[in-house]
Length: 385
Ligand SMILES: *Cc1c(COP(=O)(O)O)cnc(C)c1O
Image (tube, rainbow, N blue to C red; front, top):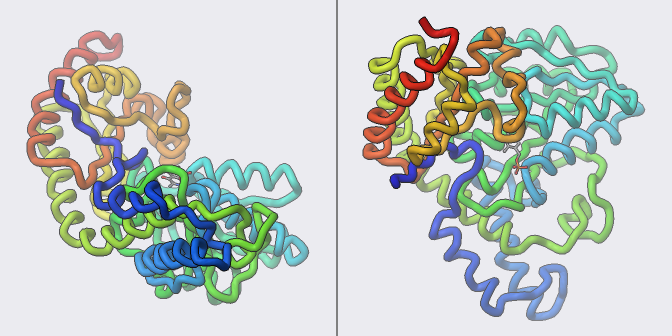
């Protein structure tokens, strides 16, 4: 059976060049980068080169990059670290209703510890009005945390404009850019962001490595206390293999993004136009233009998203319904609900996210497979006339 992967926003395969870059560490290069002897020094060189590569991908300096275990840890570190270090200045945090659970549930946790959180609404395209951030700022606001690209819809938030507002007011600004990395340009310096979360496995590196950008001069509390690794910002013996892989992946992203973005965008366009042509009662969720080049979120009215996922899986096509982190639950996606999309349309939503491995042949197969599958599901639906 054909196997087609349209779930790159959930995770990506490790790129062969990334695998190649870490083989020496499975074959003799074993030192602890914190050791001063030859074994440590040798490995330390590779580890620090990885830090430079991750920094370069977002226009940051190597010393502004802290390696973590994943995007979720980076989000936790940034938000809890900022909240705890600034709690004497104020306890107000501003975020949005469409954040990833790794931000949303940290905010909920902090509310239970006495912090006050404002959840800004989004419009029906899943976008945010920068003016709303300005209006929500209070005397006791200590942190604004707003994602760059939404993982479910691909809609982009006006990070540059928000950065100007927070910089003017002297308020820390964190952004989860896990989905943006490798797909659209990130300029930490120009965007006036203070803290940025990144994850390796969304950009062709392995699972279990992430990074947090901490702008120079910004001090936040540690999440993991212990030894003096990562300039005393994150304890634990370094994940050398993860970091080296993530570094190589970031270098590849820089090399290939221009070319791949255009190619993937045209595949996505063909997929969208083709589905719209062949299937009626389909709507695109998210902003039509201000969105990631690879992500499509579609509601197939009168068909259930979860059933569509299972039926497409039987045909070898991997898609997702809602966010991977909430799959298994039958609740409608909180992101789509927050956009004011009716519950029925949320339930019939499917996300198709493309990546480097996809080809024109994948789109051909999808366009010949999806319409009959939707038709069959609709015939079984009590709502379809
Ligand atoms: C995947 C994802 C995360 C979590 O990253 P992990 O490395 O899987 O913990 C955080 N934010 C967004 C937007 C994501 O898509």
